[in-house]
Length: 450
Image (cartoon, rainbow, N blue to C red; front, side, top):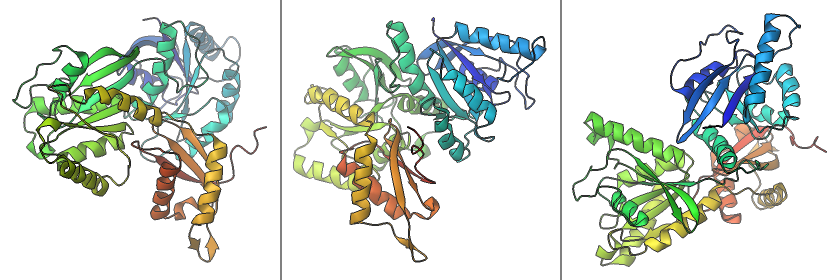
């Protein structure tokens, strides 16, 4: 373990809280009074399957030479020289301050990768600060709440490629979303649909215990696997029943473990029992995957046992259309995990949906699409005045996330937002993954950039 990340930022933005969260226990003292942390503190951080050293530092602030504050800044500088990457933390509640802007300017010259993190984003708090953080010139901000543990999956997705590239002695690519590490894939579903059997079939070994009795798998098992030269981290998970049927504590813990596997996966393969097809709980699991922003692929198991296959697939498509209108074009692969039928088609489909999940669309085609959409179906009138959609940009992938700058964003009807999302999906073939679309007031934020 030789990857080190230093947490930097103004006093009282939550650096020690994040340090404690990543280390898993209360190691650093935290409080509302600025300047509690003085010496740099080093701990072992765990984030999903990542382990690295994390360095807590004193707050960034100007200080006279010879003062204790100056000595604190020297400790911070030492931490930077020891680090492989920097987390620059800002406070969503306080907004972007002149001090943040000053030190962001310094960090732009740093040879180290800088991860811009907006802390204290509980609920809808800090949305404006997130947008404002783009102006710091440090790339896409990652929003978290260190106190409540929100947003750590997004932080994982930023840190993971940096660690992998360091381990492989590669220079860090400017595009933080290109990952040279393992594609993370979870097999999820109700109990006894064949998850462990599929897991074993893919690995070509009896890695997980299988049985006709439901509930054999309790812990989520992760295995580093290779498919056609590509590294895959594969998760076998416990079955998820409806909450009303879960009584035993160990099953509750198993389901919690499965939910964590979904969070840390990139593609979740929802396995269905083809003899029963999509039941309510299957759709509940699919909705959870979509809410987490993961790419979704459906594998229908026990396909060899189905006699009327056309009727079965029509039933599934109908249920998906009615129950999951927020996502279209989910890939469906028909397999038999027990005898291997169709399993060879699974991984190409996983790779294809993953590529859609990480896709980044150029700003030019997006704005040409927006012009055509407005011409074909203008926004509604409000008090006799047309709502104006000025500009669109994609702010991140994983899943594809877009912001439209417009007049009176709160007045854009949900039905029109759905129309825009559906048109985006159809125009750019964004099938099988969630699309997030936000409306923001104001002018084009990139108009001042030369």
